[in-house]
Length: 195
Image (cartoon, rainbow, N blue to C red; front, side, top):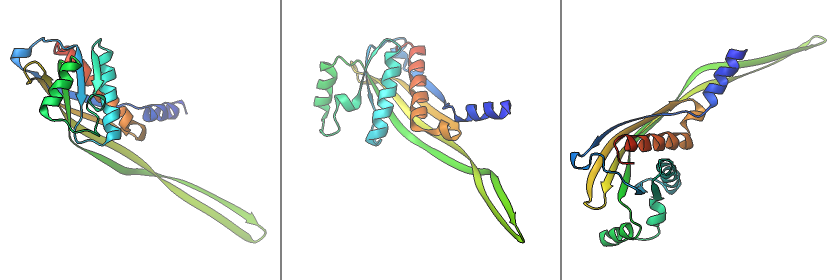
C-alpha cells in the first residue's frame, strides 16, 4: 500500500528534464551580462508570458536584471530596428535572449484498464452493473533554440539547443515545462560565465 501511494505521489508531482547543448563564441568567453530581455517570437501570448516570466525569474535568481520582451516591446505596437535599438539602449539591456520554438510532440497511450462491477440479487432477479476506465500514460517533448545576442556588437555571444521532456499527466503541463527550461537556461548561462 505504501509503495502504491509513493508511486502515485511521484507520478503526480510535476517534474520535467531539460538538456541544453550550448556553445560560446570565442570572442565572448566569460563575458558577463547584467541586464537581459527575453524574447519569444511566434508563440501565443499566454505561453510567451509564462515562458518569459519563468526565464526572467531564473535569471533574477542569479543576481542579474531581466525584463520580459512583452513588457519592453508590447505586442500591440510595431517596432523597426531603430526603435528596438533605442528601447534596448534606454533600458541598458546588454543581453538579448531569443528563444525560438523548434517543435515538439505529445503522446498518450492506454496502458491498462480499471474495471468495476457490482451485482445484486433480489428474489429471483439478478442485476449487474459494470464499467471500466482506461488508464493512460502521457509524454511530452519540446525543443527550443536559444541565442544570447550581445547588444554592444549585435553578434551572437552564445547559442544553445534545448530538449525538455517528461512523462505523466502532472509532468507535461506548460508550467512544469517552462520552469524546467528556464532553470536550465539560467544554469547554462551561468556555467558559461554569462551570468
